[in-house]
Every structure is written in C-alpha cells, then in structure tokens.
Length: 428
Image (cartoon, rainbow, N blue to C red; front, side, top):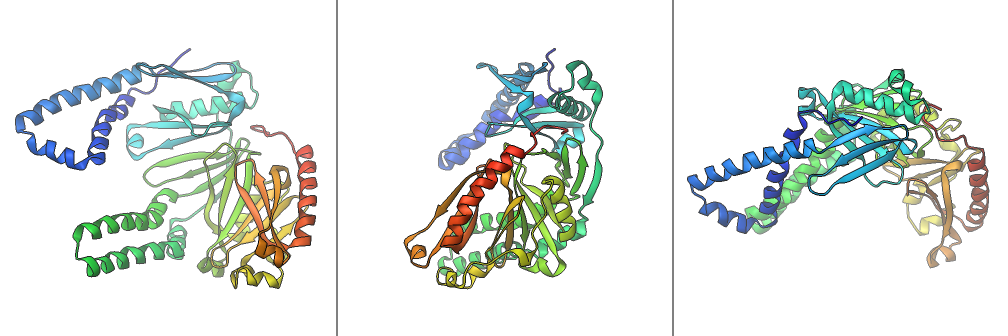
C-alpha cells in the first residue's frame, strides 16, 4: 500500500522557487541589482502576491505526487510533478539507513530517512516522515533486508543496542583546540586579510578573501563541535549505531561487513594524551567517522568490533623504509611504516599528523607496484592496495625486493581472505 510523506513536507519544498530566484541573483548580481532598483512598492507587493501562492502550490503538488511503498523485495519511491520517476530499491542492496533530524525538523517532530544503496553515487531519501514513523520504517526495512518474512518484519522492531562509548563535550572541545588545522585556519583568517588591506586598501578584495577564510575557520572548529557534539557509539545486531549533533541530530549505522578501511589518526598535540580519531571507508556509504576522539585503548576495542579478528599492530611492529629513502623525502620518510599480519595490511604515513590505515586482506580488490626513475635508482618502490570503496592505501618507499615480494604475497592473502570471509549480511 502506497503512503505519503508527512504533511509538513510542503513547507520544505515550497522554498524551491525562491531558491531559483536566489540562484539567478547570485549568478548575475549586476542584472539583479538593476532589476531591484527599478522595482516600486507596488511591483514588489504584486511579486510577493504571485510568488508566495506559487511556492505554496509547488510545495503542495510535489508532496501530493510523492508516494512510497514497501513490497516483499523492494522499496519503491514515486516522485515527479511533470516528469515521473520511480526508484526501485532492492532490500538486499541496502547498506545503511540513517535517520537525521535538522533543527527545524526536531521542532516539528519529523525526521529524514537516508538510504545507502550499493551501486548508487548518492543517497535516496524520504523527507520528511514523522519521527516515530521514520524509526519504525527503518526497523522494518532492516528486518526485511535481514531475511525476516514480510508479514512479521513490522513486528520485529528496532534491534536492541548496547552503548560502547560517549564522547564528553569537554573532551571534544579540547581535542579541537589541540588540532593544528583549527589554529592554522584561524591564523590565516587573521593574517591574510590584514596583509591584503596593507597592500591594496581595497575593502572588497579584503572581504572576498576574508569571508571564505572565516567560514573555513568556523567549519574546522565551531562547525565540527556542533556536528560531533554528544557523539555516542552503540553496538547492535545490525551494526554499530552512531548518534551525534547539537542542532541537527543524526542517527547513523555502520553496516556490518562493509567497512573496507579503518584509519587511526593522531595529530601531534594529541599523542601525549594518547587520543586518536577513527575514520572509515565504507563501500556504498558516505559515513566516514567512527570516533571523533577517544583514548587509544578504547578506540582499538571499537575497531575490533568493526573488523572482527583484526588487532591494531603496535608501533614497534611497523617497519620503517630503508635509510636511503631520506633522499626522496628528507625527514618525512620517518613517518612511514608497514606491518602485514595474518588479517590486515597496515600502512602508516605522516609525521606531524600520523595516520595508520588498516585494510583487511579480504577487502583488497587489487595490488599495484609503482616505481619512478629516481626511486628505481635508489631501489625503492611503492605498493598500493585498492579497496571496494574506491580508495587506495599505499606503503611508500619500501625496498624494491621487499615491495616485489609484498606484491606477490598480498595477492595470495587477498584471494585466501575473500574465499574464507563470511557473507556481508545484516544482523549476521
């Protein structure tokens, strides 16, 4: 049976005609300014009298002609006012289902359902549903994807979850203050406009440069704090659940078996406190952060749940490139390291902002060896492993003979890992 979205949805979609006018004004500001100077009060009132009903009618019609239905095998979404579009989303291809609530949506008691599907570049979404309806639909879709019968899927409900970690706001704030990118963007926002003013004395040039820099500084500090506020990680049969956000609240799921790469990032000023940031590459999903900041021991325990059977190699087990690699990258060569265990390919890079990438052998899609003329002369080579998330992890500046042997052995490990890996299933 087809259903419609929440009745508050037209208010959101009514902004589309207004957005078109704003886009035209930004694209051609001179023409827009000339047109605005010609407007009288009468013309302005007539324009508003036409625009507001037209926007309201557009929002209502797009809501009226949007339906969705859940069948035995797929989720169907029909949209379109003049040109109809029907999306057929196979349930077994769903990778993750996220529930997000922007600030105004939280006030109105509605939520947005976002679906990550294999083979699609962007998320399909249902916006907006009632908050309770969104959670119930998410639970039903996950139950169907897990193999429950259609007549019982809606009775299964949301799988229980056990909280693993909650990041305190104070720890998050301190971690942002100890991040070099925060101070770098703040310094650039203060110094660059000042230098431009002294050189040009042109206010518009200074504003055109200062505004993007101030925006970048805000995004790297206050923006991240607002987005990562009250970060909570919980474990459930359908994967690791992540809740976060101060104004816009998001409820995300890391799907089991679809994580291709895990990265442990250590900025220089975090190392004394033994803090790390955990990032992910997930096939078919845009979710990229697992933990914004956490003690290393706790982060490693969470990684073990994302990648069962994988342990993070300790620092002493990571072998550095040979000393002649300093001729290619003076000083920075010391930040590179490599460890290959029975379960994972681990490569470290970075000296100030150290990052350790972990790729399970079963997730490696291809292995490549590259060697430029200067590195051939130094008998050095890079080994690249490509994953199913269209990402690459590279072991740089390895000895040429070691790299050739690593190329052969890694190909064999990957074949064995894929053959023995369990199937990627919800609620496995």
